[in-house]
Image 1 (tube, rainbow, N blue to C red):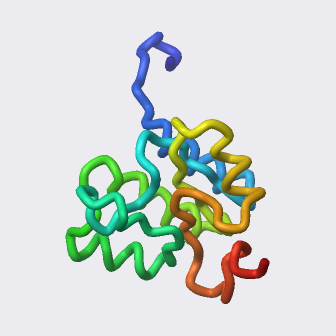
Image 2: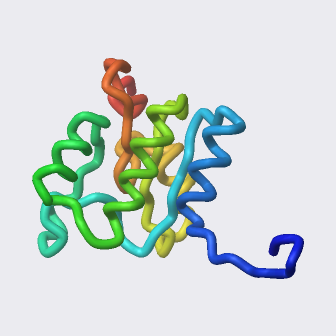
Length: 125
């Protein structure tokens, strides 16, 4: 609400991205109702487990990414371009999804990474 008691609808992903940028967060996680980013949303086998910013930008440019995933992925790119080390898109319907991402070798969902870091931490195990 503002000073005149007007209420506003603010997109939660936009707000989370802005907060992560401002507090210089190491990681940002978006919990959603899909398993992550797909090359083909109709093919559950096409889940992308790791996506570099440049690859994400190509998928957006060629129209592969659309619908509700488009603004979410744009927020991921924005966060990384502004100092967040990695962003995760996880299926919030999965029990303990954050723990599974952090404490398992394979992880779950899609990790969006900058183009500079050579390895994703799951590759170091």
